[in-house]
Amino acid sequence: MADEHAPHAPQPEHHAPAAPSAPPAASGPAAPAHSGSPGGMGGPRPQGPRPGGPAKRGKRSFVRKKKVCRFCVDKVDYIDYKKSDVLASFIQERGKILPRRMTGTCARHQRWLTVAIKRAQNIALLPFAAEL
Amino acid sequence: MAEERQYDLIFICRPDTPEPDIDKIVSTLEHAAAEKGARIEKTDKWGRKRMAYRVSRLREGFYVFMDLRSSHGEVVKELERRLKVSDAVIKYMTIRVDEELKRQEKLKKHRERRAARRPRKTVSAPSQGGEQAAQSF
Image (cartoon, rainbow over all chains, first blue to last red; front, side):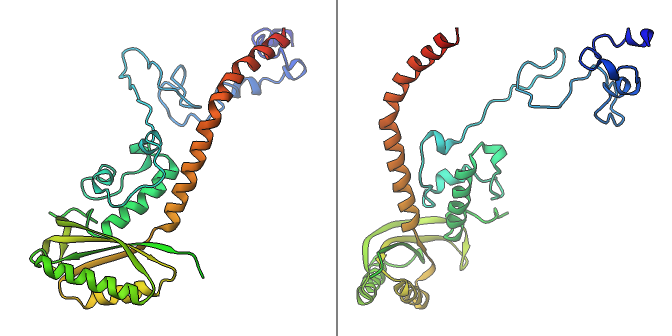
C-alpha cells in the first residue's frame, strides 16, 4: 500500500482512496488510442484547438494567415451575379466553385455567392466548365 | 393588388445583329410588357461580350439587360415566348430579384442603426468595466 502510494504521489492527491488500484494509473497516459503512432510519447498532441503559433524548431513552421470573408470586410449585403469579374475570383481554373475553406468566405456569403455564380453561369458570364 | 415584383431580364443576340434590329426587339418587348400591365424600368445595352462558353456555336454575343417591374408573373411568360421565337436571340434569362433587394435594404438599415448606436456603447463600456473591477476588490 505504502510503496505503491509513493510513485503515484502527484496523482492520488484528489483521489486518495482509489489509489491502490494500479490499472487506472497505467491507462492514464495512454488513454487516447495510440494506434501504431511512432514515438507516441513526447510527440505533439494534435488534440484540441491549436493556434498557428510557433512550431517546433527544426520542423517546417506554417504561418497560417487568418482568412477573413472578403464580403464581410466590404460589408456586402447583396452579391451581384452581373459582376462576373468578382465572381471569377471564387472559381477554380476549371470552373468549379472554390470551397469556403480555401477562400475564407463566411457561411452566409458563401451561400449567396454560389447562387450568384450559378446565375452568372446560366447567362454565359461564367463557364460551367473550362473548355479545352 | 399584389405588390410589385422586380425582375432582371437578360438576353443575348447574335453578334452580327445590326443595332436597329436589337432596338426593335427591345421596343416590342416594351410594348408587350405594357400590354400586360407591366413596365420596363430601364434597358441597358452591354454590347458585344465574349461568352464564357459557346452558345449556338458562337463565342460572342450582344448582351441586353432589362429591369422589369410587374405585379404578376404572367408577363414573364409572354416576354420569354417572344424571345424564344426571335431568331436573333440566342439566350435569355429572367430572374426575380425584389426579394433579395429587399433583404439587402433591410440589412443595410440594420447596419446603419447599429453604427449609430455603437459610439455610445463604446463610451459606456470602459466605465462599466472600471466599476466592476473596483467592486471585485
